[in-house]
View (tube, protein in one colour):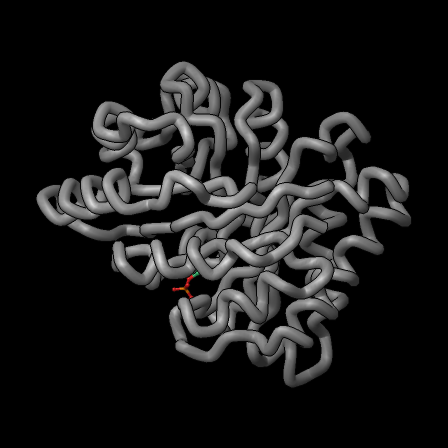
Length: 257
Ligand code: PGA
């Protein structure tokens, strides 16, 4: 059975006092009984250590939003997977569409990042998704296949077992327009089949695939109830404590798949 995950991606938000306030709110208000759902918060790097000190509970995980494609050394401004590991940060978002779009990250670089994270036992949440133009041209499956095969298919079965994939259609990120549960399910099933064809049925059945793109408390339950959707990667709504907690609460009646 796959576990469900509700993850918050704060992106380059907010400033320090607001971050402290939000962390306090989450620490105090995320329900302790969260029904087989793992909660993950991915704040900017500089708040990770503070968040770690502040969370006086072990049921909220922390993740980073990026890691370097280099191991260590003279790479000014970079943060390595081994640094994350040494801080006990066990998750990292890799290949978010904003990294691809604004920082030129391609599958070749992302494959390196993923391998370094896996070497350090930091779990990569690998993001894929098509733009609106690509969907309008009906290229979404080709694009996602290329993103997955290009960055993941060199991994061994043991390594791919540790990966989480997030399907985040670019046209749904921060726009208020989420993929319909049907559209998301269709792509999640496609991704699961890609993994099955390349690896095997057990690996594909156990792969956690999150949906991201304008998830809110009003659409979370319907999306996360779909057979191949195992939770969400949440941007904007994760910056509002109450909304994020409501999203967590909507998952309580969803059975594990
Ligand atoms: P959004 O972002 O929830 O604000 O659409 C999701 C993401 O980019 O991870």
